[in-house]
Length: 298
Image (cartoon, rainbow, N blue to C red; front, top):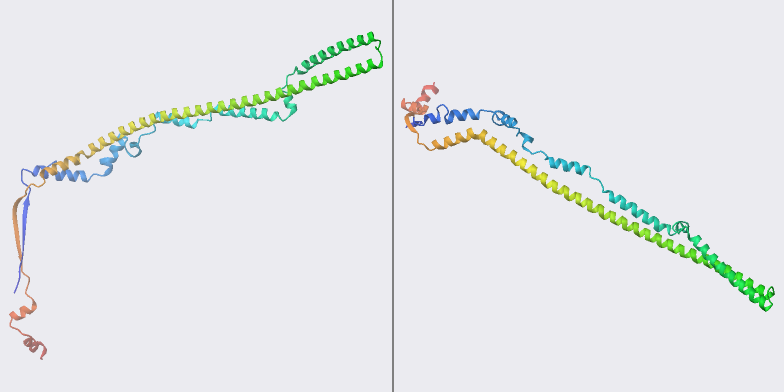
């Protein structure tokens, strides 16, 4: 039995009141086609370049304060007090090492020490001379002046004088030597204290310089952050301007979305498949036997 297939097509159209907004000049479809066929350079690239916001133009450059800090950091050197402290410490060590050398210690002794000792020796010699005169007078009164006993007494007195003079020299030099070593030790301690003071001053100066640079750096960072915010605001404003046609087009599309379309007509077609070869033979009254007799049994 033959079958047929029916296809119905309904034709719809935009309401006339909305046609200017959809297909008319400046409507959604023409405008969308115009916008979407433009290349990137035309829509975004060229305007961004003109505004100086393309690529690295959107990144804020180093602020003047940051440039100043960079120059200061590159030229920053070790505080001079450190070198002065090192020099003072070296002098202190030199003063300590000189204590091991009598020759160097002598340089710390008073240059007038020998004069003082000579005065003391002269005083001792005058005292001895006075004693010798008294002894001679006593010997003369007893009648023993010039005798052996007097000679022995003079010899003993002279030996005592030489011993006293040597003791004055040795004791004076020893005292001067000890005083010189104390002076060396005091000088070494003074240099060590001076070196420590210079080191503390250098550390304080360096810390002060670093704190100042940190403060300036914070201000420089703030400068650059503000500049970056300005660039971001300019970029966002420009992108809003460039995207405004698309935004307006989307708004227009939202306004007409969901509006029912009118049906202007419909078409219907029916397709009936042709009969098969077997059915055609049956319609003609021919059976398989008849076909055999006609074509095969000759």
